[in-house]
Amino acid sequence: MEERNMKHTIALAVVTLQLISLATNTQAGKPTDYLLRDSAVRDQNGDITAPCISPGGEYSSFKLLYWNYPPVVRGGQKVIHRIAWERIGANPNAVLYLTVIGNWNPDEPLATLINGGFQAVGETMVAEVEFTAPQKRGIYRIRWIMAAAFSPVTNFYSMEDDQNPLWSEIVFRVE
Image (cartoon, rainbow, N blue to C red; front, side, top):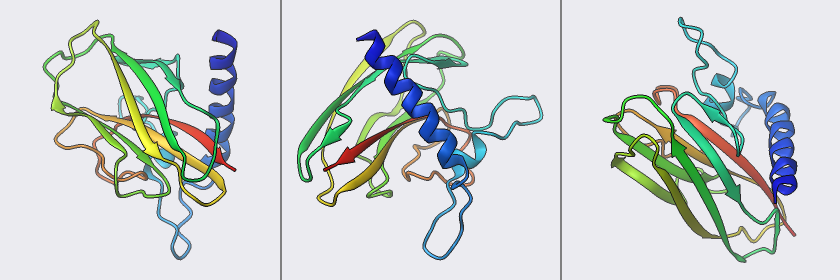
């Protein structure tokens, strides 16, 4: 299990680095990917403005414990994946929003895991998300996006003023 998670973490890191070059591709029909763009930008305090964490990694007040998913699925298949995260610090009264969104339908979250709720420091949460894989063969991406602000991030690419969300991404293939 540990070795499998490491392979997924390495694959995620490689894909994320490859995708950074696509982040600001504003050719006709291609949106700006604000999360990728801002994952390499630091604010006046030196903090990354949209930090990306890999499963098993942590940033600031959250740790993404694991994200289990099938890396290859059939078109139209019902897919279930489990995500676990832990609150490890910061303001326990912060209002949280957590969405899971796929790039094949970027304006419709697959799930809203926290919608203006709270999570106690030290609390571990586990969510199971089910969705139907796209019919068309190809490579697809899913993002787990945590915002501690005034509203959830509801677009896969985020928006320019989305209050510096914490996020993670997985990639899967439809055959």
